[in-house]
Image (tube, rainbow, N blue to C red):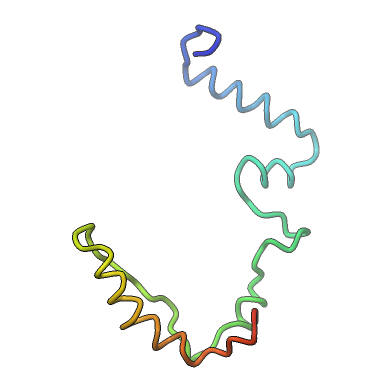
Length: 98
């Protein structure tokens, strides 16, 4: 649109291919920047071993909050106090990570 050209699927595909080709053999960098896939060498990826070391049978796997927009602030307060606070109280605040 900036150039005054009509945008088509073919032009989008060609544009993306041109950008991806500009990375050359740096596929990990391309995937990180264009596809939002963390590079493992930078330590951003959570490995299975790291996740398993942080797991505990005493902790819930998932805490869900499924509410509509009506009275959101009040419901959020009730949810945090009723569901999250009891789970967070026993945690050691002096430990920042697993």
